[in-house]
Length: 386
Ligand code: NAD
Image (spheres, rainbow, N blue to C red):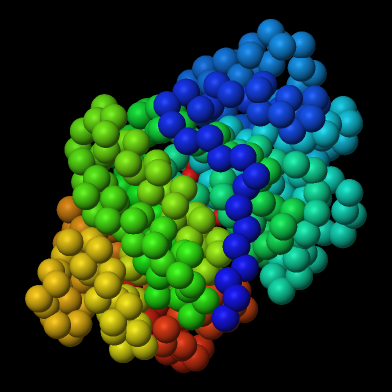
């Protein structure tokens, strides 16, 4: 099999990388950026800082700050209107996955006139304005993926959009921007990264390039996530988590996510559970169900996360993996759908729609054990209190 790898052209990783926007624009021959961010990031003063740097270099810019969590089609159309007013030649995202996905979709829709839902998978968005991503969570890895996840305002479906037009041309990955993340956001986004790495490693589309990156990401997250949650000022843990998140993005964008993400998106779209948290609600149970499809791959994950050692059999390692994931979710106080406040009635009624949306996204087909709609429905029912 030939692995087909896509990456940003420029990746700057480390403290102060986010201050290199003017230099990066010049390097790429770009001169009229639209900056995309959300109100909370604006309140932290980071957008103003970027704007001042651009002013100092005489670079024309405007901003769209209407990003909403789990970005909606309505928010994208608002941003597109701002883009079209000023003939921008690129879009810069400053924020978490929501800001990055908003910027990506605005950039890819710049010259398109069909509704966004027209372009969800299996369609592709293969061109658009250049995108520069500056992530502030560790995280979705969206800064290195050719993916955007957009919620249809009318149907509430969390749509998966894919294509080369969604791959940032540059990513400025600066862990110092994550030092302000509160515990819940640190935990949820960290588990999102862990799911990216683990799912990429067990995916039917895994390849030797993504394998090494996914394993490195899992090792770092297992070592540093609890510390980053407990000690928000710990620079070593924050830096390691930021790198692991970017690696998770590279791994899954080039190997695909699997059943956890496939089942997670509908929970986010219908019940507004934060993305990383809905992944976490599913992580132990879906891993346990999937292990029989690729036991030795899951055992590698257990060893990479130091949950098992070399002398454990694959079977022992996999039991330790499931127990270790359950412990991690308990330590990070991940709720169940029930304790999050979703009633059993609402959950049961939503299951057929969620199962269908999960299957339609294509992600379950990359799972080592491929489920049908009935099995997905049973898995949803199983995780409600578990
Ligand atoms: P987010 O971008 O939705 O941000 C959540 C909240 O955290 C916002 O209020 C934001 O202002 C705040 N925040 C962001 N950075 C902060 C910081 N440094 N300090 C304090 N607060 C901060 O959260 P996210 O988890 O990064 O992104 C989730 C979205 O990304 C979902 O829509 C998900 O579907 C999507 N996603 C996309 C990809 C991809 O490859 N495109 C991958 C995974 C997830």
